Image 1 (cartoon, helix red, strand yellow):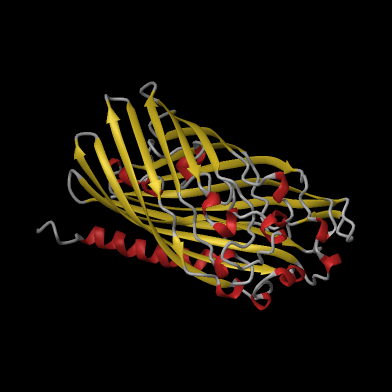
Image 2: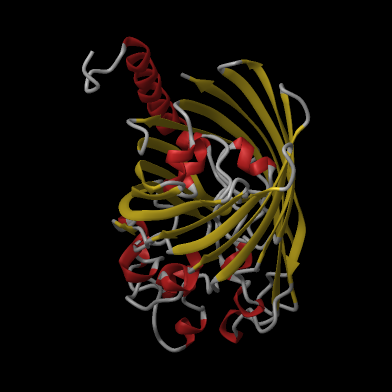
Length: 428
């Protein structure tokens, strides 16, 4: 048979992948995430169980979402998973002269379900292709008691940002143990804001600021990666993710800078893994996320006091800083059928104390992530993986956070997270 013809088994796998892609798209409206700022702390159940480490420690098809060069290290397989994500978010306002003081819970919507899948297929001894579809990030707050009611806001307050990443991948082993990979990176994102009507008075387009329903945007960028093996037990990896340039949220052109612009920030990182013993693998990742490079995310609220309205080219944003993220993880082969994992991640806090007012809506401030996981091999070609993650509560107390025209005082924000997830792995 010609190598360009697809055997029946492979056709079935590709058909299953297409079905799962459609399923992931249909499930998007119920998803929301936030860990490393508003990005995931890992992709795939195996990586998440090991603290999110994946850049140089490929374990399944999901690894191509972290480093596209990993495709050459993965056998022909399909992985399908989901996460149950439960954030605990809220805020407190103190010392405000306009009547905003109070303690507010943003937990009116919980939990969230995030499906994901990935497929990798070697085409030859040196070339592999793949496809990963996963939730790339997001943020949700839902305040049944509106913190801005004293300003005249009506109804519940909150935002709902969701992002789905679609990354076809090709990787080439250009020398023994040395691979490069490339993924065109397509993003589908949606956004909705409610209950922040009073701030529209400070917008250049107040009609497209709040309570405009769900809006959609689409974008594209690219991701490149490197994976190298040195000796029998050391692997080194690196990746660069470009900014993802997206269409505008037209219904929120008066809220986000650049008339509704909300590009996805660039990021880059590197990792290493070592087979410390025949049964134990240790890994570490470093990642840098450039939140400040996107005006709608990185611009400070002080722009408003300088006469630049919401929605303008350099209008106010959430004031997020760039962050560095460190992850460490361990994978232990307990038996032929059982693999155990544990990990820890530590990220910077992107929200300065001066920027907590708007971040009542987006308190992506957790810093520590503790994870455990395990895989049970049910047969030679079929396995099940589970993991759990806990990010303890992190609070950022405001300092000069509420401008005098809004009554002064401070806004304090908090977030904690719990997640459990499972995946099924199929070999071919």
